[in-house]
Image 1 (tube, rainbow, N blue to C red):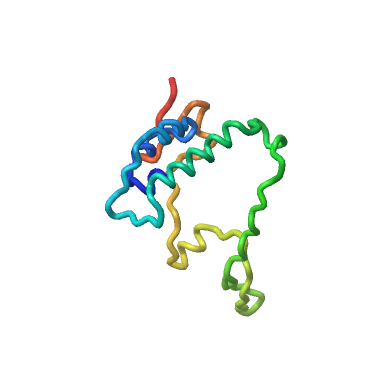
Image 2: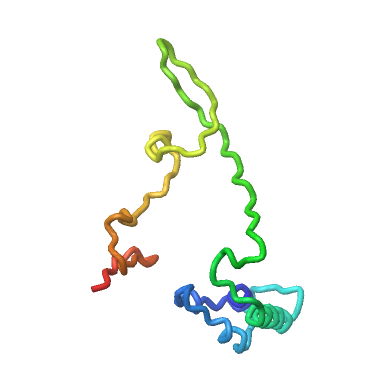
Length: 140
């Protein structure tokens, strides 16, 4: 909420494992001029403060088995049918739902594919990191 209201992106530079919720709660939230809200900024920051306090007072879950219930994720939507071509003496075309598609097949059809720049996981050693810049950082 803080980033949406203030457009302050300073928290993006902080690793997600290092939360600074208290810092955000204590800051003055200055509404960015381009942001339109249906309530005063103070109400949004108060909701966050109350929610954080409730979480701090509640049972601290350290393993997924401690959770009172599971997350009910929605089903994955069915992908659109893809044209499949078979050759059995003659060419046969059939529409089929494919749950995975080879990159090469998509590329051959002129579709946009993501060029994954990260090295294979098997080439990374414990402690190696690759931030969003793509720079390879090896921990010595």
